[in-house]
Image 1: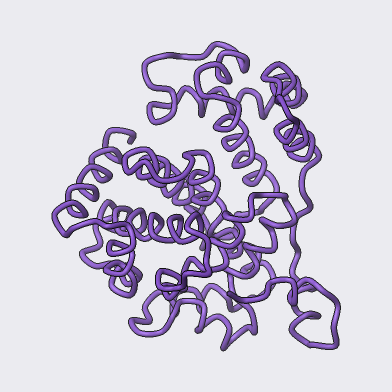
Image 2: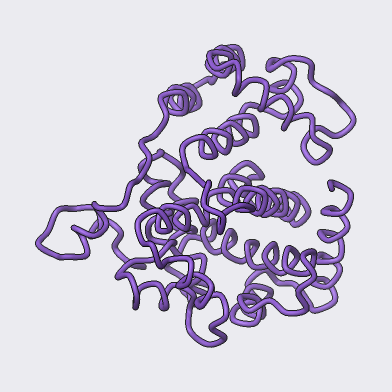
Length: 287
């Protein structure tokens, strides 16, 4: 695996200077307080509720999200305390982290109009797949789904021509998506998203999966933790389902790594097709 620490330590490398010129939003204090409580030996739902309640706007947004058809189910929470009771503190913390990311990362560029809608759709798909296949923790899958492309708006803010780079990379049928970015900008959205995740104190599995989510050689790398490989594999399934939902007949990323992802997850062609159909249906139900 790449040594991310090399990117984060000062050196004479011009790439280091470039990375420092990219605005990485600092971790919100609300998130730091929440993570501190979650790291306690016996995290208190009441304490988490008090932390969330400090921001009235966030509390309202979190309650609305918790009561959405995808997360809320039949039970409707009337308070943050009830949301924590229904969903659990980890899922509530994950939803809150996503809301804080929306607040911290500007997406007012026309090219990014649907960025958070797409990220939210991916996060929902990741949660669905994690639960359906009983792989990993749903809240970790959710956080990864939301954050895996957060490097995109940060690079768009830094480079005036990045939108063109992103569009061209998305059409490259052969090379990894990030190779095109590296060639033009000496960095890529996966590396920048990973730095953001590390700075925000997200789990190492999430950070590493963000770094490698276009690197499908990880499926054959026994040194890469299973949690990381599973997130990358599930993200390919989610991406394929989203492309189908948006009316695309083909998914470039699926063509690059889908077969290896299914082999890693132990899914047959029929099982994969059924999963993608289920996801497609869940998107329509949540619309």
